[in-house]
Length: 93
Image (cartoon, rainbow, N blue to C red; front, side, top):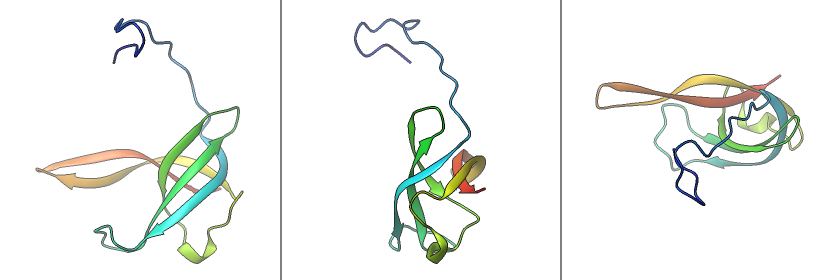
């Protein structure tokens, strides 16, 4: 990781982000390969500031609502080349 302004490898400050927030916007993707379509992509406004683009999990697409409270959870995204890829997803609180 490098600072985009000066390319200093130590020029970035670590910032802790909240693990809870509210749904800002979302879309249901029926074209992405998935064992259980659709994949719901969401933008979450984190408590205390910040915005994160993630997938929703543990929630039926018809129950998704703008401004619903969410929490982040570390989940498997997919497997490629024999390796599991994990990242943050959001689920209803």
